[in-house]
Length: 254
Image (tube, rainbow, N blue to C red; front, top):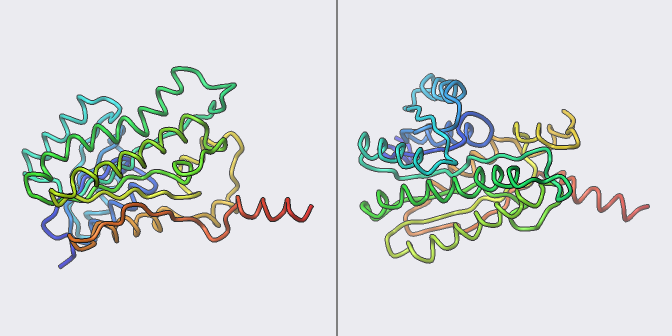
């Protein structure tokens, strides 16, 4: 019996990358997984891998940048299961035209809604279910760019991910008396499909040295399985071969 047997975990951005890896890891611990993303087909693929491994998963597609879609999915979860024990706020995106000289209002809206607004909508939707049971874990994928402003990720992405960090900490400030815990995970470079949106392409060799989705997924699993009296408020995870560090070392030699 896994540590999460009988629990329900809602994973957003579950069709690929960190979300897919986290969903599979949580399912191996016995949780029933609710998979959400904008496209049904990748979610069905994730659900299929979970079920082939003997796990339980249901697919609930939706555009999490729309509060009405989030409300609908949360209501479906409550009606079907009567609970949501774990929320993995992992949905996110970036754009190619990300520098200030390229950024448009529409581009800023897309990045901020995709990374910050969606996380707020999902959080507000699950908290009533968690308060009802006096327990729950929220795990939010931010970024190292959410701790250190980054032109590489772009100002809109960096600002949105900073907002996710602040959001997570305020949940603990208010909801700790309700047995609810929130953790923000700040990965450095992870070899996920979001790298395809980098203005400067990332090579296959460089991706192989980065953290992998499964590394972050296993960290999310660990956080979700912690005892109820413990919360990890914030954690960073980086590849050993940190390209930022390496670049600084090379500049120091020049």
